[in-house]
Image 1: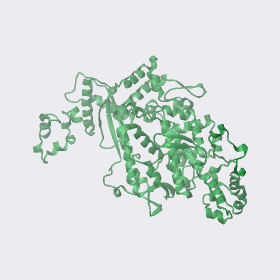
Image 2: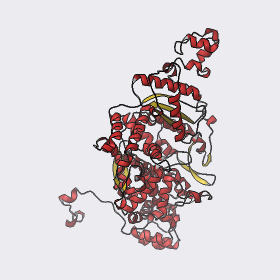
Image 3: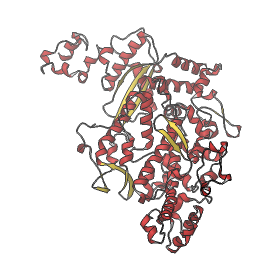
Image 4: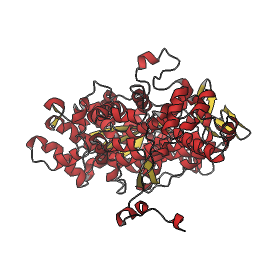
Length: 624
């Protein structure tokens, strides 16, 4: 019994009893995330670091290199001389750490969408920087928050969600297909890309690069993806993260290039055009890694998975796509010499549901007519305030709202708060901008006159929109209000592009599937093999017209101008055209309703003079 008593030194104190146990970390740190490039000696060095030095001679005699470690199984170890089961299990446990990112301590977040999620210490270091924390103050859906009160979420939580899902997808592929040789270095790089893909967003997200910058600086082609690359470089250098990245096994600058390529595509697009494989960060045998964060091939990526789930949750709109099923069925297959992420053939309907969900979110929320005009008004206010807002950048140099994108130190300070800065200012220079934002706050918004479509999609330029606004003012419908004066500046034309993510193309045409009978062969499934109820077209262009004047008479006159302009342009009839201008719509034959054309029994003789489409006189004249 005496032998069973613990030595005095082992007795815990009260303080020890409540101390959280620490994870055991190997004393000798090796860049194990790059294990597949190890030779025999590097493999033996890893064994020493794990306390397994007694097996070095056996590994050295068998010339086992890093690439072979992934394929070592229990029978293999027994065959080369590791006889005891306990020793074999210990070796396999240590080797498993090489391709499992959970081997390192992690931090836990409680996310409303994904539940309790764990992130690697290097990701935490990136999150705890001013450049990343800035995303807390940029709304995910911009002006949509003024329409949907629940849409208060921001780019910060979305970016954490994308980084987490990137790791989940890679872990699923790694577990299902060990032969892909996915290493911890790959997983870290893909997670960092997911975490940092939205660093470049400006105030009110897409409004900044989609509406404000094109008008403030029409001479440049600037997108938030470009700013994300610049901000990532600034984040790494400003916080001295390169040594920490190398400590966690990243190889620089190769992995920095890989991270940036995942966000924005090939870094040198001119050089890439003449090359079969345009990327520098990873070779062609890891091509599937470029499909996880921003999938340029078919648009199925973890960025969409997170914002579908997160936006639907906060908007109160049902989400028809469950990314967990994709995780269950994702496999990598070879397609045209490259390795692509594929899914089971039975999942094709769910993928169409995913893109349908995207379309619904755009129609019901992202392109909401009130949300759009609020962002248009914010853009107007920013343009008027542009030169008067001064932001200090590197070297003490001052930048404006539109030039802050040229300096990441200044851009780090530019968030949604600029709205409040203008709204609460007392500067006379900001008076016009301040009044526009007050109108938004008090809900004195520009009014939507209606929506129409052209027969064929058009390449719309800023000059074309300005000419349309002039035409709207000049459209002179009969019986117009002569005491109402409408100018081109009273009209605003918004052109909205809606699609399934690849303009007019069906994105499922670029997805490859496998069947359960052959997990290695990938093939295409055509739309007509799925359902006849799927859409015939995958893109459309909407033209919305707003009026800045708000009095009843001006709005009534502007509505008639809008209907007359649609008639002159041969655009589609506005949905409420018969209500806005009942005396005009019957004058355009192809705008007549089918019942007006054919009558109840298919004959024009049965048509009763329209109560909706105007007086009998107009119809008599039309069909005389």
